[in-house]
Amino acid sequence: MTGPDPVSLWHRLVDTCVLLDGFHALKHAVRFGAEVPVAVAVDRGAALALAEELAPDVRDTLDALLTQVPESAYASLVPRPHPTGVAALAVRPSRAAHLEKLAHTPRTTPVVVLDNPRNLGNAGAVIRLAAGFGATGVVTTGTLDPWHPTVVRGGAGLHFATAVERLTVAELPPGPVFALDPEGDDIRGVKLPDDAVLAFGSERSGLSPELRARAGHLVALPMRPQVSSYNLATSVAMTLYHWSLGGA
Ligand SMILES: C[S@@+](CC[C@H](N)C(=O)[O-])C[C@H]1O[C@@H](n2cnc3c(N)ncnc32)[C@H](O)[C@@H]1O
Image (cartoon, rainbow, N blue to C red; front, top):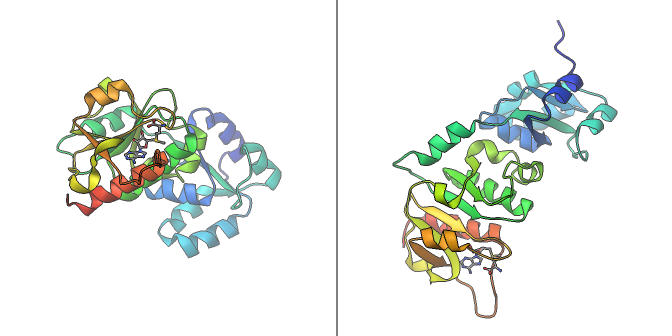
């Protein structure tokens, strides 16, 4: 018995699903429980060999999911071919489930807030960091869609490992808000609690007045005079690392 033609299935689902671009994105998404209705590979054998080598835990799942398609068909499905020749569509997790997770207390790991971020690559890198540190979620304010395909690409499939949603400042999850700003108190003297809401400003203009008004604490990363600021994603990395150390 043969399944449905993967290319037709792809066209049917592409507008409502999330593109997983490349082997690593698919591997991560599967590992963290994504529902994947269609997955294609230009060379199925090579993709499974990669899984055997790098991700034996998901090898059998990928074996069941992947369908080989001609290179021309694969190229017609993706914006630009990935070196691994693998692509898949995943069902976007329910917003209601994410909101419940973000609102749940007591919380054992922080929520990262990006206040009106502008750069899609930064947002993806932050989601990857949040997944790596086991953060509860990543919330964005403003117009950027944190599920935009370029953000998902930057996140390497790790959107499925944390709760990613867009909210207004008024809707932020509960918890003490620590907002990162070069004018704040030196982070090396601050203990970040596990239920912290860690907020970061926009690449262009820093923290919005609304977010500043919500913040209980302004915290600065060590930076020598004459340097204006760090990149947004590296600021998140340093802050999550500081939180992970646990001390003040
Ligand atoms: C690229 S910076 C924003 C620069 C912006 N031009 C401004 O006026 O603030 C993006 C965000 O990273 C965080 N950040 C960057 N450098 C920081 C530092 N030294 N201490 C604390 N937060 C920092 C802040 O949350 C900042 O809003």
